[in-house]
Length: 390
Ligand code: NAD
Ligand code: MG
Image 1 (cartoon, rainbow, N blue to C red):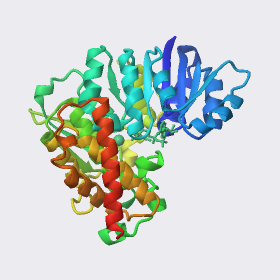
Image 2: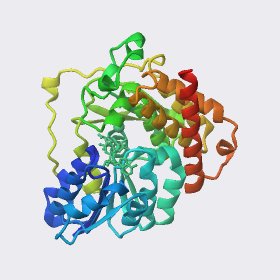
Image 3: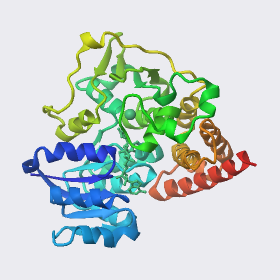
Image 4: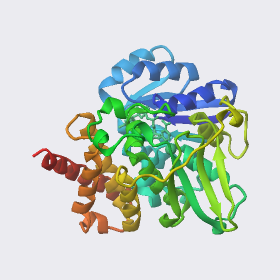
C-alpha cells in the first residue's frame, strides 16, 4: 500500500484527488488530510479514507474537528504548524493543493522527508522556485507537476532532450472576460470574475484566470520547473481548453497535449507516474468538436503576462513579491476595495516600489527571506491600494 497525504484536501484539487484515491481504497494508506474551515467535509473524508490525522488550518475550529472525529481514533490537529508537522510524516506521495503562499512550507517539509510531491500549489514555484527545486534535489525527492499545462509539457517531454526544445507554449482559456472590452472589464464584479467558461476550480484561481494572473504565475512556474529561459515561454489563448500546452522542437515539430478540461487527468498522471493507468475522464470526440481555435493574448487587457516576464528578468525574490502583491490585490478586489483592472495596477506599483529594495537584491532564497519578502510585499500592496482609493 502506498502512503499518501493530501494538503488542501477540501478544495477543488483536493476533492478531485480524493475522488481518484477513493476508487481504489486497497491501494492507498492515507496518512494526513488538511483543510480550512469546512470541517464537515474534512472529517467525512478523513473517516472515509481512514486517515491517521486530519488538520484544519483554523485553530479556532480544533474542537469542532475533534468532535466530528470522536470515536474514530483519527487524530485531530489545527494551525499552520500542525500542517507542517503532518507534512513531515513519512509518505510516499504527497498532494500539495493548498491555495496561495501558505502551501510552500508543507511542500518543503514533504520534500525533506523524500516524498514524491504532486505539486498543484503553483505559488511554491513562483515564490521560491530555486529553494523548492534544490530541496527536492538535496533529498532525492521528485516533484511532479499537477497544473494542467505543466503536466502537459512534462508529458510532451518524455524521452526528449531539453536541448532540442525551442519553445514551450502554454494555453489560456481567456477566463470569464475573454470577449469583454477593457471598459467592461473595468466594471467587473467578483461574482462575474469567479465564473469560468471551461474549468471548475477554486474561487481564487478562477478570478486569476479572468485577469490572466493565473497564466502569469504559470509562466513563472514553467521557467522554474523546466529550467528554460523565460524568452522561450509563450502564452496562446485557446478558448476550447482542450490543447493544454505545446512543446516546440528544433526540427520544427510541435508536440501538443490534448485532453478534456478535467484536473483528474493531471492528478492521475502524477499519481500513477511513470505508468499510465485508466482514468475516469471523458474521451474527446474530435470529429464532433470540429475545430480548435487559437489567438495571441491582448497585452492591453492582460498586463499580468508582461509583468511575469519582468519578474523573471529581475529574478531572485521578485516572484515572491509578485505573488504576495497579487494575493493581496485579489483580496482587495474580493472586498470590493479596488476594481478588477486595478489588481494589475497594484501589483505593478508594488514591483516598482520594491525594485532596488534590499529584499529584491537579496540573492539568497530561503524560507525566511521568502516569508519576509512576502510580508513586505503585502504591506506595500496595502499602501498602494490605499493610495488608489485616496
Ligand atoms: P481551493 O480554494 O478550492 O482549495 C484550497 C484548499 O486550501 C482548501 O482545502 C482550503 O481549505 C486550503 N487553504 C486555503 N487557505 C489555506 C491556508 N492559509 N492554510 C492552509 N490551508 C489553506 O483551491 P484549488 O482550486 O483547489 O487550488 C489549489 C491549488 O492548486 C492552488 O495553488 C491553485 O493555483 C492550484 N491549481 C488548481 C487548479 C484547479 O483546477 N482548481 C488547477 C491548477 C492548479
Ligand atoms: Mg493551469
